[in-house]
Length: 237
Image (cartoon, rainbow, N blue to C red; front, top):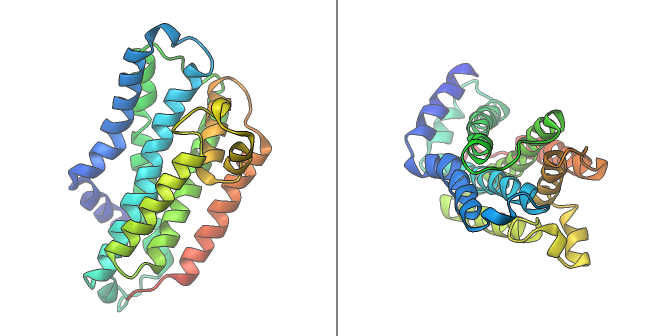
């Protein structure tokens, strides 16, 4: 497990696009909007919306786009077929991918530091709730990505599914626009999507409140359900 994780991390770090999506993009989003909306930086919902949106966007890119495409590429190139001849079970490979993703997602928390120190955003009001939400969000979003990677026969298919899930997630999840401006029906749908539940729970903890139990439960269900399905349906070739 340790060796798998170490090698997967090396491969991840060799891809410049991964670094841009994980670190540069979230910080850039916070910076651009902070400069544009400097006078309103203290106002709610701006103070909780932009940092949460930046973190959510980076995590969704990582879990729904990059990771499924990587694993599907392994399948397409025959790497997984060779691994099938070893004692490594599919669950071990998926856990290694999850570990790498979690490490890179934690690195994306530099967004918080940049937002607070450089752009005047307030830090999370309830740090424990923010950390718990972040952990559940990583598990849920990566579990969905692993499920896509488990069944996608090629890189093209994995990319198509991942991109579709990514844009649907951010469209219905309150990332494009704050939840306060979304129609009531769309907002109710958002509560039951992983990206929407993560976004709203993160905003609540950023504002100093505990997230709604519904949002945390939704994230837990996605993490457990999609993770188990990914391990069960995984195909080496």
